[in-house]
Image (cartoon, rainbow, N blue to C red; front, side, top):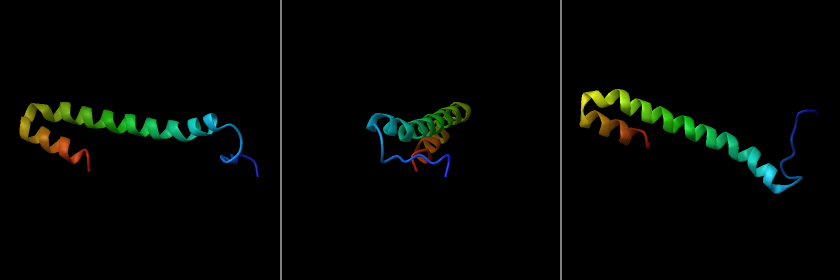
Length: 58
């Protein structure tokens, strides 16, 4: 089968990089989304911002 990567073979650093990059990208996108959401809701006051901040960690 072509296109299948065996992550149990080869150098460990390149394998970790292949696994790490999508996780870091997803975390960055999620953090950016939460920050932009807080900025938009920030005009409504501190109560709604606190609710957004609390809900962002769930």
